[in-house]
Length: 193
Image (cartoon, rainbow, N blue to C red):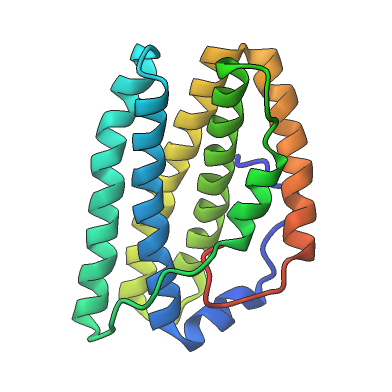
């Protein structure tokens, strides 16, 4: 369903499980950044009425996810660590086309966000299936389902505003590039991406 060209190395879950404080910290900040990204789309493209209406509740949902991760950390007496650079996202941002006007910028941002949500969904699925902690498995199953919906929303918005063919063509380019990123990034258990 997600179309990712390169699956996550199965050893990633084992690495993530070794230090839950780190993976939960990274997850919390990913949710915070997701809310901020939706806000930036709304403020950058207020004329896209359907998108604004679709993203407004997503801002609330993503911030709610941030709070859910914090609550899970509190339950486990884990501190929220520092925000880290997200090399995966930084590499995706380098692939965005520059110039070409607002419509090109919107397509690039929507597809970047769709890909981040797709990879998060895939990683949350792995956590929901392979963690030893049954509570965390259920916790991550809920996030997996949610991220799948976000991925679909961003893809649907890209098709709406760029046209189905253009969005599909550029999405395939993003998927190929993302596979290269995944192949070249070192395997780290302290990051969602």
